[in-house]
Amino acid sequence: METYQNLISFLPYKNHAFQIKKSNWRVNSQDKLLNHIFGDKEEILINRQDLFKNSDDIERFILMTLMWGYPTKGRGSNIEKLLEETNFQNLCYTLVRYRNAEISILDIKDEIQNRVGLGISTITKFLYFLQTTIEGNRALILDNRIMTVINSGKYQSYNSLKGINASNAINFYNGYLKITHQLSAKLKVEPDQIEMFLFTFGRNLSKNKNNGLL
Image (cartoon, rainbow, N blue to C red; front, side):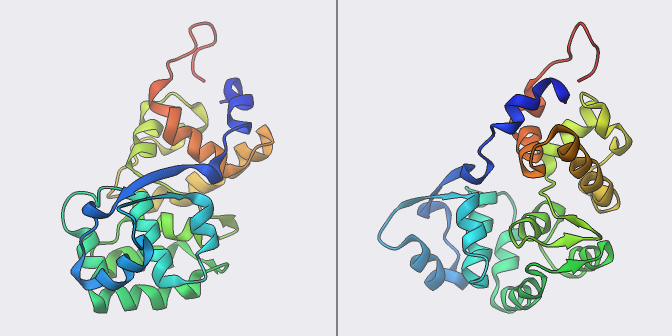
């Protein structure tokens, strides 16, 4: 990871954006709110900074975070289930309490187990943009793409997390946060930049032939 310190330090994580097409986001239960977000546009660009700024409007925040995280609305019906009116209002009630708050890993486990359609990738996106702290470390996104990078064994710092997958990721999440925050201090970069590096470049970099693992 040290090999890419300079690259990581220049990653503009707040500008990390996705183009969202209105045609991909037809959700009858939240049609009014979606129309308000899109306005008269058929496509909008959402970046991380937009989500940080909108975190005080919890309903808008949830929709925009899901759109940023799943630009084509993903596969299956998980998002549709989350946005059903009763589920959506319950999610709003919970997440507004997590904004700038400290919670435990058990709180996250309860959310995943008891809320239909919510997995580790989605809940960590919400917590990250709400700037929630989990047992002393600020939340970071952990999705399937990052788990694949961890399991590749390319980055020795994360080898203790090998075997992580969508089903057991909550058991590794504290370790992921601790390692990433420690690396950020060592490399003098933001933990957000390391997370973005893993997501953007992690799968596409090979081993250093001279020095072994990165």
